[in-house]
Amino acid sequence: MGIRINLDVMMAKRKISLTELASRVGITAANLSVLKTGKAKAIRFSTLEALCRELKCQPGDILEYSQEDELHGKEI
Image 1 (cartoon, rainbow, N blue to C red):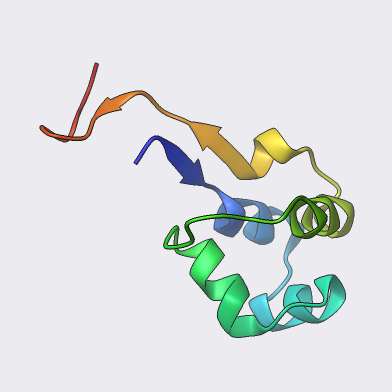
Image 2 (cartoon, rainbow, N blue to C red):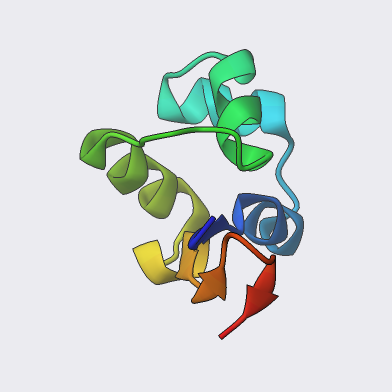
């Protein structure tokens, strides 16, 4: 996958739990967990905005693009 989710890194830096962040952002802990583990296929801009607001960060701190060869699983 070309997009990596670094939500767990930002949560650790801000010392906030998944349950607390989910409550502050207004989404379920289960949906936040799907995003945190990188299993989400999409994210709403309103959710990304709320995450950035609560974590006091930029979208690029949460989302990272990585060029990798999906067929061979190696960077190109």
